[in-house]
Structure formats: C-alpha cells, structure tokens
Length: 306
Length: 259
Image (tube, rainbow over all chains, first blue to last red; front, side):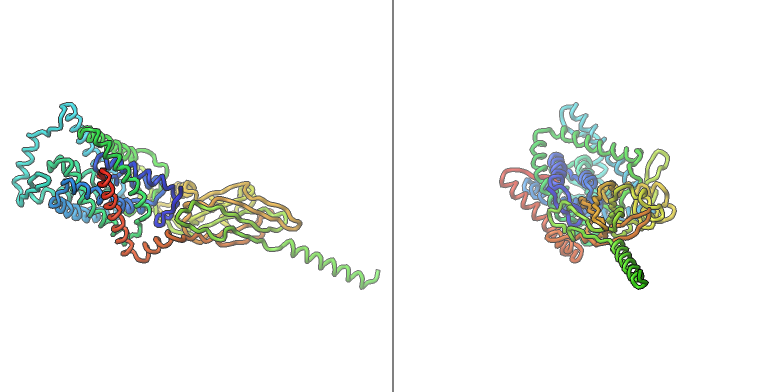
C-alpha cells in the first residue's frame, strides 16, 4: 500500500516503512540502545533524502524514548539527577561537535573523518563488549573485574564535587558523567547519531551503573536531546517528515515489544555479545565502504543528522 | 481554349495547392491526460497519456522535462587504497526530470545538431551540463550524474512506445507511460516534436503541473510557512504518541523500552 511522504516528497510502500521501524524497534527492545545508527542508512536505501531521513529519525526517537523512558521510570530505572547531568554534558558536547563538523565540512573531507570515527568508535566499543562478554560467558558469570574497577574508582574518587546517585547506586564527581557525556555528545554530533550505542556501554563499564538503570537514564536524556534536535531541524531545515516519523514509530513500537520479549529469554551476557556482534558488523561494513569502489562517485550532500 | 478560362484554371489550381500546403503545415497539437497529477495521501504514481496530431508522414518524439535545478553532490576520489570525498560539485543546466519517447533512437531520427539543440537525449543533456567548480568537471562526474538520475527513474528514454496512425494528410500519435513516483511537485513541460528528413519540422507543448493536495499539501505548507508551529507539533505529537503507547503497553502488561 503506497503512502506519500509530504516532506520527503516521495511515495513509498507503507509496509516497508513500518517494517524498517519494526526491525530497528526489535533491536531497541532487545538491547536497549537506539537504532539511529541503523535506521537512517536504511531509510536512505529506501530512497528518502538523507537530511529528511536523519531529521525524521530524530522525531521517531522522541516518540520511542518518551515511551521507553516512561516505562523505565515506573520501574525505577531512571536516575533523574544523573540523567540531567548527562543531558547537560550531551548538549554541550553536541554544540561543540556541531562546530567541529562545520569546520571539517569547510575543509572538505568531513564525511571521510565521520566514517573513520564510526570505524574507530564502533570497533572499540563493539570489540570491548564482545571480548568482555565472551570472557564472562566462559567464566559463567558477569562479575566485573574488581581490581580494575577499584583502581579506576580510586582515581575518580579524588575529583571534586562528589555526588551520590541513589537510583544508579553509584557515587561520582559531577565532572565524571558530565565530561563522559560531553565526549559522547561530540562523537554523536560528528557521527550524526543519538549516541545510545556508545552511551549505554560507557555508563555500564565506566560509571559502573546497572544495565537497566543505564538504559532508563539514557532514554530519559535522549528524549530531551531528540526533542531539541527535532525542533531545530523542523524550524531551520524543514526536513522533519511527521508522517514518516509516525509510521516508523508504529513499526518500532511493535518491534520493541517483540524485542523486549525475546530479550527476556536471553541472559545479559548473551544479549551483550549479540549487540557487540551487530556493532562490529556495522563497523566492518563502514570499513569496507572506505576501500571498496563506490557504485557512484556522487552522493547527495547531507546537512548532518542527530 | 479561352485565355480567360486558362487563367481561371491556373488560379484555381494554385488556390488548391495553397490550401493543400496549408493543410500539410497544420501546426502539431498536443493533449495531456490527466491535465494535472495530484498527489494525495495514498499517491502511487499516475498513468499519463500524451496524444495529438502531426503533419502527415512525420515521426513523433515526445519529451517530458522538469525545471532546471542546481543539485549539490559530494564527489568521491581515491587516496591510496581509500575512497574519500574529493570535494563538493554543483551540477546545473540539466532538467530535474527527462523522459523521451520515440519510435527509434532519437540519434537515428535527427541530425546530431538538432538533438543537441533540443536536448533530446542523454548525450545532449550531458553536453549542456554545467559542473562547478571547474576542477570537478570531469567526464566521470557527468556520466555518474546521469547514472544516478537514471537509477532514480528520473532520466529515461523509451523507443517504440509512440503509437502513430496516418489519417489522410495528418498523423495522430499517442504515448502512455507511468509517471515516475519520485518526481517532486513542480510544473513539467511535455513537448511533441514532428520530425522529418532528420530535422524538427514542428512542435507542440503543454504543461503538466504536479501538485500535492489534501493532508500532504497542508502538512507541507505548515512545515514551510509556520515552521515553529510545525516543529512544536512534531515534538508534541511524537511525545504524546510515545506516552500513549506506553500507557497501552502498561495496561496490557507489556513493556516498551525502545529509543
């Protein structure tokens, strides 16, 4: 069944859009990370202009994150205090990242550096998660290495403005989550994604937060970030396609429900190793795109994503 | 024979000849059905028929052309083993849509100069293309642009699709085709060329407006003219939809944890 997307300006199969949302929603529900790094390329492959794909994906994330954050809030998985600091760090990092990308674009080789960033970040995060989860599977448990954690905490514990985050069950200097999210914000802006797939592993491995609280808190801060980006894209670039976003949301909601149910059947370490495998696969695809001869020497100019 | 009768016969014959030549030079006509393509919420492209009359014995070439618009692209280049962006290229001077229907390849019907003058095939379009900055103006950039447009269905040539029928001193023609779904709202020009002896001997044009109607039109207008309101609407609609789904999911005992 065809449907016309008024901002993208093209007619597209309704079930195809809902299906794309469902696939990404399934992964989101299963792993608790965003699908921005997957959905935008999928939409582009379907013929949606890149700028509309990225902006509408942001709008879809507003819906999905508000739904997810509300569910996690009821379950007590959202640390509002930590989430607010992460949000401030993310917004600051995002602003810095946008400046950096502007300079890089002016230099003319931004896309190359974006792809290299993808390869390095996805390779590091995916590789670390993969081997950490593999070791845990071999050990038969997910007990973190105490020695490494203690050394890290003793160093971080000396920083000023220490604060207890009750929901997350951790105590850190305000600077730690702020700077961490600042870094993720910069990377997210450069890479044009939400940053969930970097943020959640960082919260789990560096801030030592429980996985579910990391997911809930990340959703909380992502809601505000995505809402801000959606509004800015709509007012500055006129690239948010509400029809596309709502269709994706229908698909992602159904997919997320199915993903969450399948996820419950798997152990945490199994989930992590699956997610790591997907992240590594995307990394390999990106690395391949750097060396493989492109099908066409021309690609449409994009104006950044989310 | 009476001298006056001879003069009268000559005059009548001349008059008949003049009338016949006028009939032969009857200007070509064109009718496009539907008169506009209206894009509604469930638009899936449209079937378009172009028909009309041409001078007898003429071949017919029908061309649909979109307005010229500058497009910006990143060009890729090889740096050692790595493919990376080699800079931006702006391409202009080419129609946003080009469809050509003819009985045989246009280059076989017309002299090259005529094809180029009317921009009637891909080669002619490539020749008219402007690439800025000049450093990016390479043969492969032009060829890849045409390849990209062809892949989108926005540059197409079809041979053998024009139906013609001789009707005394005139030829009727008709061609039907599927309007490309990716062609954006704009005013397109449909032109029928009468071709004889490797030259264009007549042409008729009609406009085919493609417009959005109904909900898509209202949403697109809102997005462009009242962007702040549209932005707020997007955020609000997405938030409410998300919270609504969470409410339903919590009622049926499910869990939503996507972002």
